[in-house]
Image 1: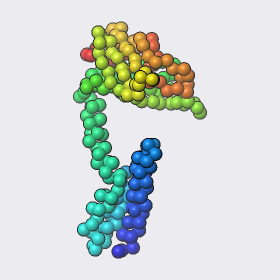
Image 2 (image 1 turned 90 degrees about the vertical axis):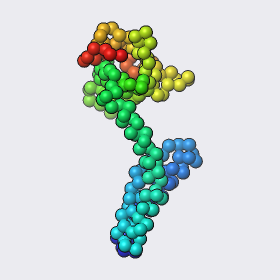
Image 3 (image 1 turned 60 degrees about the vertical axis):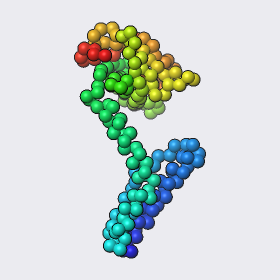
Image 4 (image 1 turned 180 degrees about the vertical axis):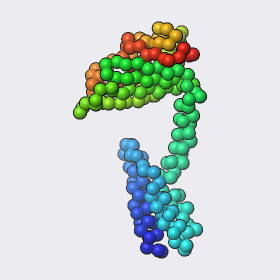
Amino acid sequence: MLPISAVLVVFGAIFVGLNWWCLIASLAFKKHSSLVPPLGGLLILIGLFFDPTWRHLAWVGLLVDAGSWVMAFAIPGMIADLRKTSAARLVLTLSGNFDDVKVLLRLYESAYYEIKFERVSKPLPEGWSARSSHGTWTLLNGRIELVSHTDTTDKPARAVLEPCSDTCYVVIASPSIPNRRFDAPEFPPAQISLSSNRPNKV
């Protein structure tokens, strides 16, 4: 094997081994460990491709890398998420402020929402600076109920918004935030108004 091919294959094998270790550790200890993209598989593929003797086996590099399999299964979900949050599926955008925090809430078709929080002031040495979350939303008697993906029986994470005009909603129910400096919110606090730059079409 050509020296350059051998070097690439060796480094690729190291990354492949690390990916498999992360995957096995995640399954064995029930603790998530992030896999890196199939860098190891790509290095092996390139290394084998450079050597005419091994070129016909270059594709094996991607096949043996656990990162390739994880990515193959993740791509359909990523495409579905992109479609879910496309501009064509946007139903309503609401924004507002509380304390030194900017809020941006987007409601999409298929009862999906995204909400983002960002501190306007300079981030503190301790505490949070930005946070985003998502979940499902429903419409009942003109009110919007948001149910976070973190919602559980033991730890409810829900909020209710009530229209106050054609372009405004006010939060009438929301989980309390014990310490707004250190605890990033799931929803804006109660009595906060969120407005839209266009009439409500919900």
